[in-house]
Length: 72
Image 1 (cartoon, rainbow, N blue to C red):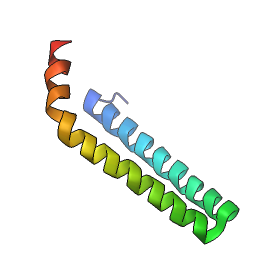
Image 2 (tube, one colour; image 1 turned 180 degrees about the vertical axis):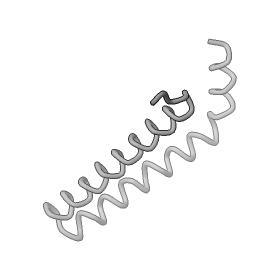
Image 3 (cartoon, helix red, strand yellow; image 1 turned 180 degrees about the horizontal axis):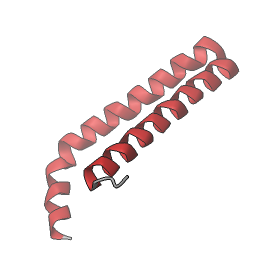
């Protein structure tokens, strides 16, 4: 069976995203086992902080990154 490029890309994307979901679930289970409910709270705060930093950084640098990427 010969797959088109779009089909290959779709399959690879689904497999990659599925693997990431499984790894994230395993991390949550391990953190819960090691640190309990308090550890899940710390994990949630840490990820929230990373997301907030990423959003604020994106606000200020998004247009400049797009500008310089086209130049490279």
